[in-house]
Length: 300
Image 1 (tube, rainbow, N blue to C red):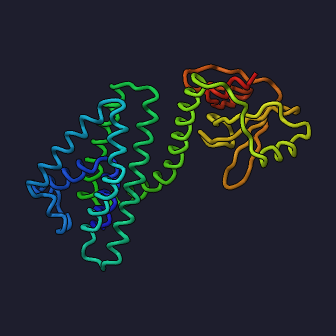
Image 2: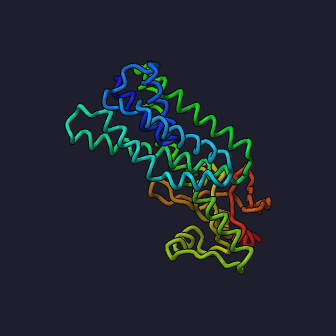
Image 3: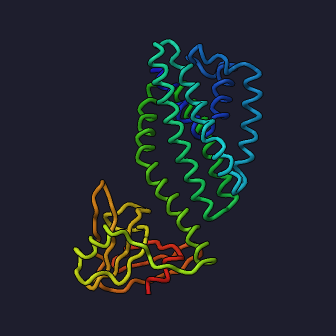
């Protein structure tokens, strides 16, 4: 139970802040705050390791407080954090056969990469409103979370393991949604640039979508444009699809669980709230979709 708690805690914490995880584990072992740390991790308490980890943590602490510097820092650590987590995991399970050590390293690296991707996605999405105070608060909360997670894992492993497994399940649920948000943000930024520097184009629709539109309504669609669901029953947040204005009314086409789904939005014209990077298209019943600026001109 102690090794499982240490394995999960170090894997998850490394994905958030590798240097702080090493620093907390090393200091805790050296000062006697942490008991039961696998002997193979005794190297973390070496003064040289603590000094390097402390300096790197200080550098990351400062980088995390500066808007637009954080994404660059996180991008550089896309390889470092999973690799560091894998090495810590191998040391944690050093007593098991080599095959299981390799599997543990792969699992820890994957967990750290998932946490890192989720963290990076949240921070990039937060840069849509670059508030230095908010970024500092998020960074401090992340650091406190790492310390609390490691303390709980080493002090109360029986309590920590169910919590850590729940965090892994939450990560599996959350990561796809964050990736969809990043996809939308990238499309919004690119759409804004196209709206500023290039002529508006009609939305390109594949032949498969055109065939589906004809099946939905033989009269065809007078407007089809890419859109992302924000508040739409039956479609996940930031789910990409197409808004289609058919003779029978508006519909939203999207794919979910490998199936094409159609959402009937009625025949009432939507209200459009213009924004800097995207427009909000609001249908009756508070069904809200986001359209990038280069496509919003086709709503009329």
